[in-house]
Image 1: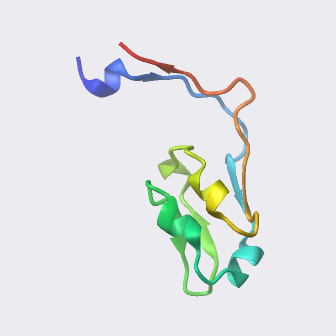
Image 2 (image 1 turned 180 degrees about the horizontal axis):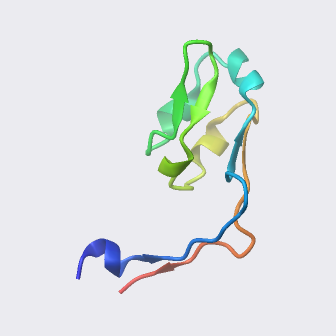
Image 3 (image 1 turned 180 degrees about the vertical axis):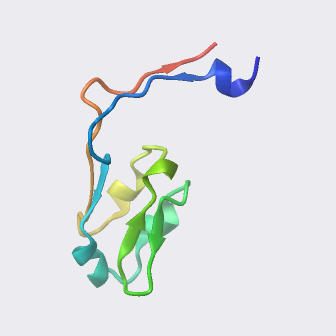
Length: 87
């Protein structure tokens, strides 16, 4: 049995994207720590200073949420949480 088949993931529909990025605040952030701390490359800096979030890449680790010094990134977690099934 493949590893991906063994690691079952229950997904919940939260309606809108679970990551909200205030791009106006991102224009003022020069270092963009969210780009360097995200292990999945979810945040892509643009030449105009904004950030584009690739929601499909997000691992929901919350690293960018903690690293953002301006609070420009907010997460909306599923109401029932996310559960993993191993084995």
